[in-house]
View 1 (cartoon, rainbow, N blue to C red):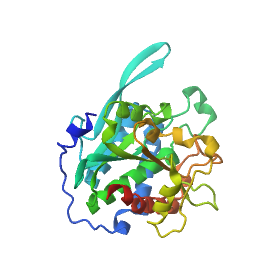
View 2 (cartoon, rainbow, N blue to C red):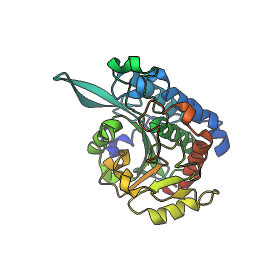
View 3 (tube, rainbow, N blue to C red):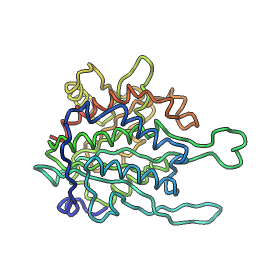
View 4 (cartoon, helix red, strand yellow):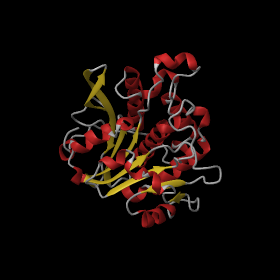
Length: 310
């Protein structure tokens, strides 16, 4: 990815015409189901970073970005932003090209102020071949971690592109390499001028509520109290946004927003909980996703995050 100031002076343009700006007509349960189901399908083989099948996931996301009306960035291969990644296996080191999927909506007023929305699309792959005989299922599908976050990312891209009310330039990034140590976001953060970035907003594991009686969304940030109050003022569901319920888990340091160390406003939306027995298991399937909750979360986040973009 090139330096921010040069990239956003030269955004390609895709026209979005004849689209309603009603949130109910744009952000739908059916669309969320479609995205999660595609990314968590067995054919994706668990979306392990830089594997051939993972490019299929990146291609799917890129197609959704294009449909939403996002713009590819100059210097990238369409919506693909490649970065080098070294793999070591059997004492042999191989250099491969991993893919972040990136698109943008140019700001209407302050084009050189950037708001990043992001979610990682990679997961942990499949079980080793010598263990296949012990399991009927061999693919870690990662429906919640993090097909759910990517589904939100795509719905927000559709909604904000249709609204066209963004004062600032909005950048949408589906990162790879998160499960390997935030590699995709770390590469991006190291190769752009972070002084142009006002806020980084990250979505990870929002497909299941914290518990059956806590159907809320945690907002994890360095100064969350006033932020949560502002977000809740934007939505009709009273108290939908809550503070970090599991501070001992250090969630703030464990997902892609954290890589942008020079950005003061880093915000993490999640409903992941330590008690989630499906986390990083073969059982993180589409059938375990609460799509009614995911729909509520997506719409509330879409309304709430207008405070950052307008």
